[in-house]
Image (cartoon, rainbow over all chains, first blue to last red; front, top):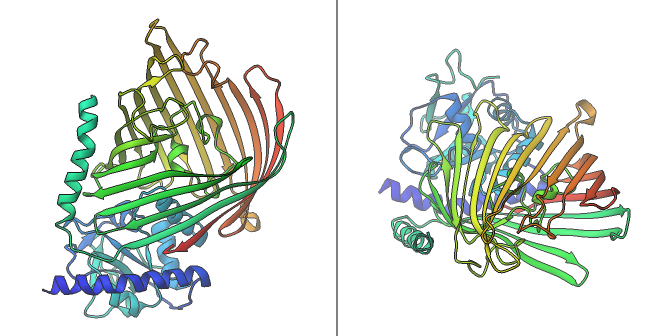
Length: 169
Length: 350
């Protein structure tokens, strides 16, 4: 029942995320500032994953891995440009700046390597809300904005607060 | 082989429709882009000079459901007699997993890296035009492929693959068999590439394509194309090199000929304040075998050296200035200058 209701909400929410993505493309990006020192990787509560290696995380964020082990498609939610946590993810996971990131995803979609690109979100609240309603969704939020309802994934066995966590400024 | 070729598309449709019926319905996700270019050219000899509106290309990805995706690419090309519309790609794909995706439609043949990396998006590629061997309308390689393809990534290995069966070349060897197989002999293509996860942008790949190609005298020729490529196209470096070998066996005489093409393209993005500027050079060579029953009188030998500068004056628009020195067959070398502006526009979802 919960799965069915999540799916329905996800289907309702997707077009709105899509519209917002288009608005950003036209407006050149929204601004949301944060002083994150570490970002937590958050997934949909029903996603059967507790830990990812950093290489697996890179493959998911780069669109090289598009399905979870349970067969559900990955939906990547990315913070809009300017957010500090986005810059950290672009640096640590992609190794790209904004222009390279945009060209990378246009190329991936144009080559039909992925069926859909990342969906833009405009705040940590929006990221947390959407990741809990879109089955298969994955996103990132600043460590200090993680709530008790979110499912945080360990990276290389470490939580964001632990020493050696790779997504830290 | 012909029987397998007939059965595979039917199996694809049945398999996808039965599996699709098990999926939960969801709203389609749509991404669309517009690519275009305009150019000024000065060419020695009798070739046309002046301004030219290049191709305007619309591209769309539609995720119809969690598993089913539709990809389309349509071009509008300016010609002396008007504008030509072409469906460059139309692919319906069912994604079983990362390791296995099955599709049917019209593709760019994965027999060349350049052919499948940049398609008709000139803004994406580093130079004004494709290398001669893989240019739009090339008779050297079959640029398009109409058929069915299985592709994916090998689990736990940095290896991607694609295997396809299709119609092969049409009677006009520059075209795919859009209206059916010209000679009743299906073409088979297989490609693979190693792309280490720790080296984003680096790949070593290869491909094989086999078919009976139609010849002008109405006979068929056993055709085998092999390709090897090495690429680094991320960060400040843009390095692409390909080797293509095409072997033909004339059905009447049994004569074997081998024609080859090679190119090396290298570009380096400058640093600091000049980060938007990327100078590039390319060397190309095509050797067409004497007496080749498919290429004789159709595809000439070719040599070229070119150099240019790409300037990304906006995040989604680039200006390229390129000088090309070329030699076609036994004709004299000619020089030409091109100035091209190209762009990409995410229409929505991008």
